[in-house]
Image 1 (cartoon, rainbow, N blue to C red):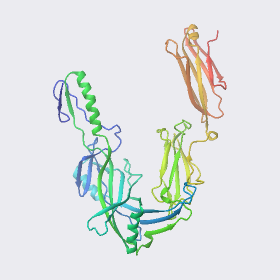
Image 2: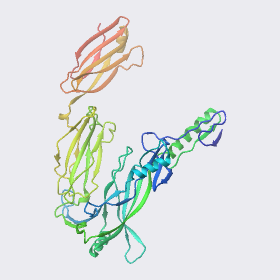
Image 3: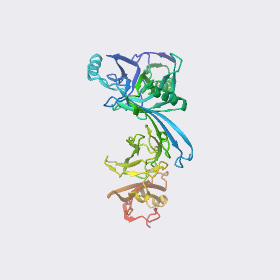
Image 4: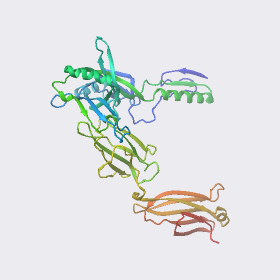
Length: 477
């Protein structure tokens, strides 16, 4: 067998196979990093599978400001005394946080028009979906001109863009500081100015490079083996993964005398440190198949920020399409005042897309586990696990070729049925079969038995199923 590398589309020899890798989900964005070009100062990427579609990288970051010009920046030092709520009663300590709001420079309509003009007719454009932003603080070292140090733990954004074109323009992130790092910033506050930089990196799910084509020549068995190996390698080469698409810095020189509320020291007394806001949410409705009427269940959570403002998280969703995702860890991206309880409400979405929102509820404390699983007495249906056993030998001896049982019930007030059949001409037809279904709580399950054979069609029922949910079928003598 000969293996020769060729460009895609070139045919040679008596057997030629050309393969180009494709991602499993063609509906997702597949920007190709090696295709990047700059048009009018905007970086543009091709799509791996759609040659006329391109992605443009949004502009650089800058510090967000409020309408009055105040920078969206907060340096917080919080003194707390531990409580039994989080298991550290009697402990005392400090939590130092930096909260920073940033915004992306949008790409103007004129810039987009110029991109379309240069790429040609038929070009479609969408923003490059940014999966994550990692940011950190950088400060100059004291008495060491030209050298810098990174302070605090890197901060990331929990919710990035998505492939449908919805992108964020403004975000907040929080950096937790160690004692020495906080001291550096508070020393600058005493001097009247905070001078440092924010280093950041944009991550996008992108393809590193376009996979090449290949030709295989030789006998069919050898070609088949090698083709499977190369196809797997090609797919791996063209798999989307988080890649850095932009790095940059935001220099900051903040006048704390003009905006004294940018730095605050707060005594929480018997409170808990806001940076520890954490919840666990569970829902087993889909994993345990308790709610076949639902397509999705979501929870909205609202808490009080350290500044007193209400902070609401994006809905946390559990779906019938992903029943294995029954437990979610929830972290707040901003500092939360844990001395105030949080509120939540649950929204249910049925299979027709109609939503039903519950009332807002107040949690007793932050230690509570949120379990959204529907309680047994609130389930709209009763689960039925039926066992139906047929004496197949006896039915064959009676001349039957086909046996059917129809289980009749109601769900949502509408008639439903489950069908069980035995092909008596087959020796492999198992005598015992099981069915599991959900019916309205007050429904009575009935069954109809139909046998077909040389003597014609026989029908029995409908008859009620016993409380033991077991049927044993034998032909009438």
